Length: 205
Ligand SMILES: CC(C)(COP(=O)(O)OP(=O)(O)OC[C@H]1O[C@@H](n2cnc3c(N)ncnc32)[C@H](O)[C@@H]1OP(=O)(O)O)[C@@H](O)C(=O)NCCC(=O)NCCS
Figure 1 (tube, helix red, strand yellow):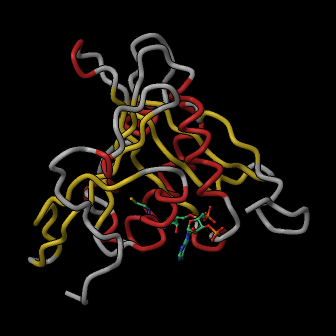
Figure 2 (cartoon, helix red, strand yellow):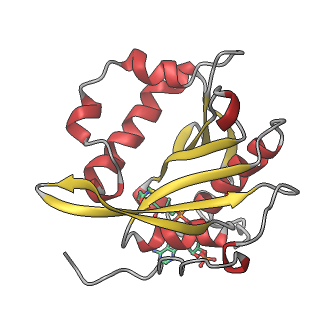
């Protein structure tokens, strides 16, 4: 969806967050954890307890930084975020993980999520050696599954009982997206493949 000029959030600009964005980043994520406990691995209580320095460290720049967080900002307000985690291990550094995706509840369905994921993909493409992105999403989180699917991610596995929320198991769908020029055979074309898990939500727990 193209942003129109009258939509709130349409004028949002995207940029990498810096350590001084930590208070706004923390506030947005704590709200997301509180509103969508089944969508995240961390609980709001756990993350509310970590010091601001932890959030700022996640946003630090420099040669040793393995995480970047992109934010959508409008008039100084942080409306959405997504993270990209690279790793330094020789045999796995062609993969990066998309994490911490959240758009403020009043700003959804305006295209911000898609812009953030696409910006993260562009950031990944610009990093030499990166060949694919991975992410996990709770089974039944239809808005997020649809967003990732719309951005070219495909499911490759379902992790049963990935989370226990108040004693109830939640499965996590694992998705991936090759970066341009790095694609092997598509899931559908692999000989002897097992069917990809469905994106549709199952019956309520
Ligand atoms: C998932 C989330 C980030 C989507 O952000 P968003 O800004 O609303 O997404 P967009 O407006 O960019 O939507 C892009 C596409 O995603 C899909 N989508 C988004 N929300 C949807 C919904 N409620 N129902 C169905 N599809 C949806 C659509 O395909 C949409 O394209 P369209 O608008 O052209 O139909 C947002 O709902 C959110 O923050 N949810 C709570 C936290 C969360 O679940 N995070 C993900 C953890 S893995």
